[in-house]
Image 1 (cartoon, one colour):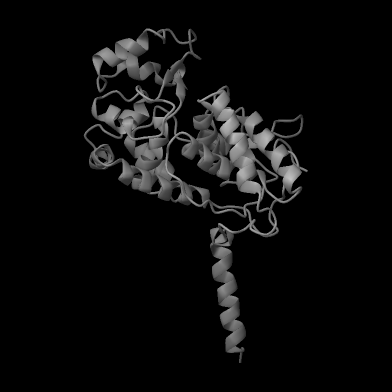
Image 2 (image 1 turned 120 degrees about the horizontal axis):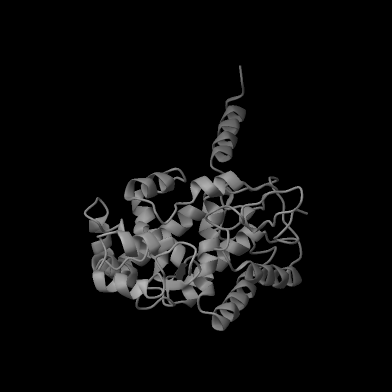
Length: 318
Protein backbone atom coordinates (compact mmCIF):
# COMPACT_ATOMS: atom_id res chain seq x y z
CA UNK A 1 0.00 0.00 0.00
CA UNK A 2 1.29 3.48 -0.91
CA UNK A 3 2.47 5.72 1.89
CA UNK A 4 -0.38 8.25 2.44
CA UNK A 5 2.13 11.03 3.16
CA UNK A 6 3.96 10.51 -0.13
CA UNK A 7 0.63 10.30 -1.98
CA UNK A 8 -0.40 13.63 -0.47
CA UNK A 9 2.95 15.14 -1.43
CA UNK A 10 2.50 13.91 -5.01
CA UNK A 11 -0.98 15.44 -5.17
CA UNK A 12 0.43 18.74 -3.95
CA UNK A 13 3.16 18.64 -6.62
CA UNK A 14 0.56 17.93 -9.31
CA UNK A 15 -1.56 20.83 -8.09
CA UNK A 16 1.44 23.15 -8.23
CA UNK A 17 2.37 21.94 -11.71
CA UNK A 18 -1.11 22.71 -13.01
CA UNK A 19 -1.01 26.30 -11.73
CA UNK A 20 2.33 27.63 -12.83
CA UNK A 21 1.27 31.17 -11.93
CA UNK A 22 1.32 30.02 -8.30
CA UNK A 23 5.11 30.16 -8.64
CA UNK A 24 4.99 33.87 -9.38
CA UNK A 25 5.25 36.08 -6.32
CA UNK A 26 5.67 39.73 -5.47
CA UNK A 27 8.81 38.89 -3.47
CA UNK A 28 10.63 36.79 -6.07
CA UNK A 29 13.57 39.23 -6.36
CA UNK A 30 13.60 40.41 -2.73
CA UNK A 31 17.01 38.87 -2.08
CA UNK A 32 18.39 38.22 -5.60
CA UNK A 33 17.73 41.71 -7.04
CA UNK A 34 16.04 44.09 -4.60
CA UNK A 35 17.04 47.08 -6.73
CA UNK A 36 15.09 45.94 -9.78
CA UNK A 37 12.02 48.11 -9.12
CA UNK A 38 13.78 51.45 -8.66
CA UNK A 39 15.97 50.67 -11.68
CA UNK A 40 13.03 49.90 -13.97
CA UNK A 41 11.03 52.88 -12.74
CA UNK A 42 13.82 55.39 -13.36
CA UNK A 43 14.24 54.31 -17.00
CA UNK A 44 10.46 54.23 -17.61
CA UNK A 45 10.00 57.70 -16.11
CA UNK A 46 12.86 59.10 -18.20
CA UNK A 47 11.41 57.55 -21.39
CA UNK A 48 7.93 58.97 -20.69
CA UNK A 49 9.38 62.39 -19.82
CA UNK A 50 11.05 62.34 -23.25
CA UNK A 51 7.89 61.15 -25.05
CA UNK A 52 4.56 60.94 -23.22
CA UNK A 53 3.17 58.41 -25.71
CA UNK A 54 5.78 55.85 -24.67
CA UNK A 55 3.80 54.84 -21.57
CA UNK A 56 0.91 53.61 -23.70
CA UNK A 57 3.33 51.85 -26.06
CA UNK A 58 4.89 49.86 -23.20
CA UNK A 59 1.49 48.83 -21.83
CA UNK A 60 0.58 47.66 -25.35
CA UNK A 61 3.82 45.66 -25.65
CA UNK A 62 2.86 43.82 -22.46
CA UNK A 63 -0.64 43.06 -23.76
CA UNK A 64 0.60 41.87 -27.18
CA UNK A 65 3.24 39.70 -25.49
CA UNK A 66 0.91 38.03 -22.98
CA UNK A 67 -1.73 37.12 -25.59
CA UNK A 68 0.82 34.99 -27.48
CA UNK A 69 2.33 32.03 -25.59
CA UNK A 70 1.67 33.85 -22.31
CA UNK A 71 3.84 36.57 -20.73
CA UNK A 72 7.20 35.21 -21.90
CA UNK A 73 8.85 38.11 -23.79
CA UNK A 74 8.40 36.22 -27.08
CA UNK A 75 7.33 39.51 -28.71
CA UNK A 76 10.73 41.04 -27.97
CA UNK A 77 12.65 38.54 -30.14
CA UNK A 78 13.95 39.93 -33.44
CA UNK A 79 13.57 37.96 -36.66
CA UNK A 80 16.76 36.34 -37.97
CA UNK A 81 17.59 34.32 -41.08
CA UNK A 82 16.60 31.15 -39.22
CA UNK A 83 14.00 32.47 -36.74
CA UNK A 84 10.58 33.99 -37.30
CA UNK A 85 9.42 36.14 -34.42
CA UNK A 86 6.17 38.00 -33.79
CA UNK A 87 7.16 41.55 -34.72
CA UNK A 88 6.12 41.24 -38.38
CA UNK A 89 2.70 39.71 -37.63
CA UNK A 90 -0.23 41.93 -38.72
CA UNK A 91 -1.16 43.32 -35.26
CA UNK A 92 2.48 44.22 -34.56
CA UNK A 93 4.10 45.20 -37.87
CA UNK A 94 4.73 48.94 -38.02
CA UNK A 95 2.60 49.32 -34.93
CA UNK A 96 4.15 48.01 -31.70
CA UNK A 97 6.96 50.19 -30.43
CA UNK A 98 9.09 50.87 -27.37
CA UNK A 99 11.54 48.00 -27.81
CA UNK A 100 14.50 50.33 -27.32
CA UNK A 101 13.10 51.37 -23.92
CA UNK A 102 12.93 47.72 -22.84
CA UNK A 103 16.54 47.33 -24.07
CA UNK A 104 17.58 50.32 -21.95
CA UNK A 105 15.82 48.90 -18.89
CA UNK A 106 17.43 45.49 -19.42
CA UNK A 107 20.86 47.12 -19.71
CA UNK A 108 20.32 49.10 -16.49
CA UNK A 109 19.04 46.03 -14.60
CA UNK A 110 21.97 43.92 -15.81
CA UNK A 111 24.34 46.45 -14.23
CA UNK A 112 22.55 46.08 -10.88
CA UNK A 113 22.17 42.29 -10.89
CA UNK A 114 23.46 40.48 -13.98
CA UNK A 115 21.68 37.38 -15.23
CA UNK A 116 18.87 37.47 -12.67
CA UNK A 117 15.83 39.33 -14.02
CA UNK A 118 13.97 38.09 -17.10
CA UNK A 119 12.88 40.30 -19.97
CA UNK A 120 9.32 39.03 -19.35
CA UNK A 121 9.40 40.42 -15.80
CA UNK A 122 11.01 43.67 -16.97
CA UNK A 123 8.12 44.19 -19.40
CA UNK A 124 5.55 43.40 -16.68
CA UNK A 125 7.09 45.85 -14.20
CA UNK A 126 7.54 48.51 -16.91
CA UNK A 127 3.84 48.25 -17.87
CA UNK A 128 2.81 48.89 -14.26
CA UNK A 129 5.27 51.80 -13.94
CA UNK A 130 3.95 53.32 -17.17
CA UNK A 131 0.38 53.32 -15.86
CA UNK A 132 1.46 54.85 -12.53
CA UNK A 133 3.67 57.50 -14.18
CA UNK A 134 0.70 58.69 -16.27
CA UNK A 135 -1.57 58.99 -13.23
CA UNK A 136 -3.12 55.54 -13.05
CA UNK A 137 -3.38 53.03 -10.21
CA UNK A 138 -0.46 51.26 -8.54
CA UNK A 139 -0.24 47.55 -7.69
CA UNK A 140 2.27 44.96 -6.55
CA UNK A 141 3.57 43.08 -9.59
CA UNK A 142 3.96 39.32 -9.37
CA UNK A 143 7.34 38.24 -10.78
CA UNK A 144 9.36 35.09 -11.38
CA UNK A 145 8.72 34.64 -15.11
CA UNK A 146 11.41 33.32 -17.41
CA UNK A 147 11.95 34.12 -21.08
CA UNK A 148 10.86 31.94 -23.97
CA UNK A 149 13.22 30.54 -26.56
CA UNK A 150 10.36 30.42 -29.08
CA UNK A 151 7.85 32.81 -30.63
CA UNK A 152 4.60 32.35 -32.55
CA UNK A 153 3.94 34.39 -35.67
CA UNK A 154 0.59 32.63 -36.18
CA UNK A 155 -0.33 33.15 -32.52
CA UNK A 156 0.28 36.88 -32.91
CA UNK A 157 -1.92 36.96 -36.01
CA UNK A 158 -4.74 34.94 -34.47
CA UNK A 159 -4.85 35.76 -30.75
CA UNK A 160 -4.61 39.56 -30.61
CA UNK A 161 -8.00 41.24 -31.15
CA UNK A 162 -8.02 43.43 -34.29
CA UNK A 163 -9.54 46.95 -34.13
CA UNK A 164 -12.38 45.70 -36.35
CA UNK A 165 -13.54 43.25 -33.66
CA UNK A 166 -17.15 43.10 -32.58
CA UNK A 167 -18.15 42.49 -28.97
CA UNK A 168 -18.52 38.72 -29.42
CA UNK A 169 -15.06 38.41 -30.98
CA UNK A 170 -13.45 40.57 -28.30
CA UNK A 171 -15.10 38.51 -25.59
CA UNK A 172 -14.04 35.17 -27.09
CA UNK A 173 -10.42 36.22 -27.72
CA UNK A 174 -10.09 37.37 -24.11
CA UNK A 175 -11.85 34.22 -22.88
CA UNK A 176 -9.27 32.14 -24.77
CA UNK A 177 -6.65 33.72 -22.47
CA UNK A 178 -8.69 33.02 -19.31
CA UNK A 179 -9.94 36.61 -19.09
CA UNK A 180 -13.61 37.41 -18.50
CA UNK A 181 -15.75 39.92 -20.39
CA UNK A 182 -15.46 42.15 -17.30
CA UNK A 183 -11.65 41.92 -17.53
CA UNK A 184 -11.86 42.75 -21.24
CA UNK A 185 -13.86 45.95 -20.68
CA UNK A 186 -11.56 47.05 -17.85
CA UNK A 187 -8.36 46.29 -19.78
CA UNK A 188 -9.71 48.12 -22.84
CA UNK A 189 -9.49 51.19 -20.62
CA UNK A 190 -5.76 51.18 -21.39
CA UNK A 191 -6.98 53.08 -24.46
CA UNK A 192 -7.39 56.10 -22.20
CA UNK A 193 -3.73 56.69 -23.16
CA UNK A 194 -1.92 56.50 -26.49
CA UNK A 195 -2.44 57.05 -30.20
CA UNK A 196 -3.68 54.90 -33.06
CA UNK A 197 -2.91 54.87 -36.78
CA UNK A 198 -5.42 55.98 -39.42
CA UNK A 199 -5.43 52.51 -40.96
CA UNK A 200 -6.96 51.16 -37.72
CA UNK A 201 -9.89 53.58 -37.52
CA UNK A 202 -10.54 54.62 -41.14
CA UNK A 203 -13.52 52.30 -41.65
CA UNK A 204 -15.10 53.40 -38.37
CA UNK A 205 -14.96 57.14 -39.14
CA UNK A 206 -16.10 56.86 -42.77
CA UNK A 207 -18.45 53.89 -42.98
CA UNK A 208 -20.18 53.44 -39.63
CA UNK A 209 -23.18 55.09 -37.99
CA UNK A 210 -22.48 54.46 -34.28
CA UNK A 211 -20.18 57.48 -34.15
CA UNK A 212 -20.72 61.15 -33.36
CA UNK A 213 -20.84 63.06 -36.66
CA UNK A 214 -18.68 66.01 -35.62
CA UNK A 215 -16.13 63.67 -34.07
CA UNK A 216 -16.00 61.60 -37.28
CA UNK A 217 -15.42 64.72 -39.38
CA UNK A 218 -12.65 65.90 -37.06
CA UNK A 219 -10.87 62.57 -37.40
CA UNK A 220 -11.42 62.47 -41.18
CA UNK A 221 -9.42 65.70 -41.51
CA UNK A 222 -6.28 63.79 -40.50
CA UNK A 223 -7.12 60.42 -42.05
CA UNK A 224 -7.85 60.37 -45.80
CA UNK A 225 -10.55 57.94 -46.97
CA UNK A 226 -8.36 56.23 -49.59
CA UNK A 227 -6.48 53.22 -48.28
CA UNK A 228 -2.73 53.65 -48.59
CA UNK A 229 -2.82 57.42 -48.06
CA UNK A 230 -2.03 58.67 -44.60
CA UNK A 231 -2.19 55.16 -43.14
CA UNK A 232 0.31 56.04 -40.43
CA UNK A 233 -1.26 59.38 -39.46
CA UNK A 234 -1.99 59.31 -35.75
CA UNK A 235 -4.99 60.27 -33.63
CA UNK A 236 -5.50 60.03 -29.85
CA UNK A 237 -7.43 57.01 -28.57
CA UNK A 238 -8.81 59.30 -25.85
CA UNK A 239 -9.91 62.59 -27.34
CA UNK A 240 -9.26 64.77 -24.27
CA UNK A 241 -6.25 63.43 -22.38
CA UNK A 242 -4.21 60.82 -24.29
CA UNK A 243 -1.29 61.12 -21.87
CA UNK A 244 -3.27 60.88 -18.62
CA UNK A 245 -4.55 57.57 -17.26
CA UNK A 246 -8.15 58.12 -16.09
CA UNK A 247 -11.71 57.22 -17.12
CA UNK A 248 -12.27 59.67 -20.02
CA UNK A 249 -12.08 56.75 -22.47
CA UNK A 250 -15.42 55.46 -21.16
CA UNK A 251 -16.99 58.94 -21.20
CA UNK A 252 -16.08 59.14 -24.88
CA UNK A 253 -17.81 55.82 -25.59
CA UNK A 254 -21.07 57.11 -24.12
CA UNK A 255 -20.77 60.17 -26.42
CA UNK A 256 -20.11 57.84 -29.40
CA UNK A 257 -16.56 59.15 -29.67
CA UNK A 258 -14.67 55.86 -29.51
CA UNK A 259 -11.84 56.01 -32.06
CA UNK A 260 -11.77 52.32 -32.97
CA UNK A 261 -14.71 50.16 -33.99
CA UNK A 262 -13.66 47.75 -31.22
CA UNK A 263 -13.76 50.58 -28.66
CA UNK A 264 -17.29 51.70 -29.53
CA UNK A 265 -18.49 48.08 -29.43
CA UNK A 266 -18.17 48.23 -25.63
CA UNK A 267 -21.00 50.78 -25.57
CA UNK A 268 -23.35 49.96 -28.42
CA UNK A 269 -26.54 48.54 -26.91
CA UNK A 270 -24.88 45.32 -25.76
CA UNK A 271 -24.09 43.41 -22.58
CA UNK A 272 -21.16 45.65 -21.58
CA UNK A 273 -23.02 49.01 -21.60
CA UNK A 274 -23.72 48.86 -17.86
CA UNK A 275 -20.07 48.23 -17.01
CA UNK A 276 -18.98 51.18 -19.15
CA UNK A 277 -21.50 53.39 -17.35
CA UNK A 278 -20.19 52.19 -13.97
CA UNK A 279 -16.68 53.33 -14.93
CA UNK A 280 -17.99 56.74 -16.01
CA UNK A 281 -19.66 57.07 -12.60
CA UNK A 282 -16.67 55.80 -10.65
CA UNK A 283 -13.05 56.09 -11.74
CA UNK A 284 -12.00 54.13 -8.63
CA UNK A 285 -14.14 51.18 -9.76
CA UNK A 286 -12.39 51.26 -13.15
CA UNK A 287 -8.97 51.46 -11.48
CA UNK A 288 -9.72 48.49 -9.20
CA UNK A 289 -10.99 46.33 -12.08
CA UNK A 290 -8.10 47.38 -14.32
CA UNK A 291 -5.58 46.28 -11.68
CA UNK A 292 -7.37 42.93 -11.30
CA UNK A 293 -7.26 42.48 -15.08
CA UNK A 294 -3.57 43.39 -15.35
CA UNK A 295 -2.63 40.92 -12.62
CA UNK A 296 -4.70 38.18 -14.28
CA UNK A 297 -3.14 38.96 -17.66
CA UNK A 298 0.32 38.75 -16.11
CA UNK A 299 -0.57 35.25 -14.91
CA UNK A 300 -1.16 33.87 -18.43
CA UNK A 301 0.99 30.70 -18.74
CA UNK A 302 4.31 32.07 -17.48
CA UNK A 303 7.51 30.04 -17.84
CA UNK A 304 8.84 29.35 -14.36
CA UNK A 305 11.30 27.11 -12.56
CA UNK A 306 13.72 25.59 -15.06
CA UNK A 307 11.57 26.36 -18.13
CA UNK A 308 12.82 28.99 -20.57
CA UNK A 309 15.87 31.12 -19.77
CA UNK A 310 16.98 34.52 -18.52
CA UNK A 311 17.95 36.28 -21.74
CA UNK A 312 21.08 38.42 -21.71
CA UNK A 313 19.66 40.46 -24.59
CA UNK A 314 15.87 40.75 -24.85
CA UNK A 315 16.02 40.65 -28.67
CA UNK A 316 17.66 37.26 -29.00
CA UNK A 317 17.89 33.84 -27.41
CA UNK A 318 21.06 33.20 -25.38
